[in-house]
Length: 274
Image (tube, rainbow, N blue to C red; front, side, top):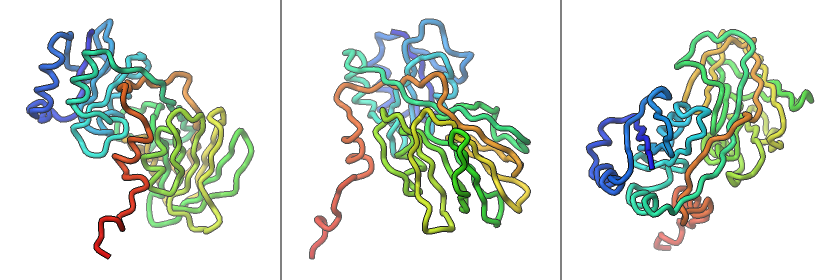
């Protein structure tokens, strides 16, 4: 098996857990990658070493190659980089894993991009969000398959995949969705109206966002990448024609991850002396 290693921190290579993992994978053809140009022919999978941010960066670098990504958690909270080096070191040589498809969003921007934080790549795994670029409130006009939705007045708004439901969307009150759910989430960020709520739409929908703002710029985030847009820009968001391949180890499941990562259902009163 040919395995590419991707990490954003070279310091992690000195971590004893990383060194032990490399020892467990000694029988494999392992090499380091930094860009898509580094990916060698017949590569079977990419090991993303770090946290969820590293996994998102790896997804951009793997691009449309279809090579599965396995997230190894040497960072903090990990939903995408779910597994410890010890778990990966045991399961991978034994072949105890499956490959699942994760939905990607494709975003088209019509209008001026005032500044790019990195080279523009239109695909995202978690979410696309727009934010006010100054002190003024942001109005976001939405159309779903051409049908207008009442304007959201807020700090911003995001469109999330089901994979992203445990990321930024969760922080703004969005619902938790199983990763295999074929839905998209539209959620306002700090809305200035008690009557607006997150909205779930089928992943066949095409969502158009246009902004109203007195500021000279609007911020746009695509996973962990940032853009500065003109307020007159329009975003069209839909599901991409290809998916991201993610490696899942045999004993893992999403509900278990909710309880171990987010302490879902835990009653802190049980730990108090009443």
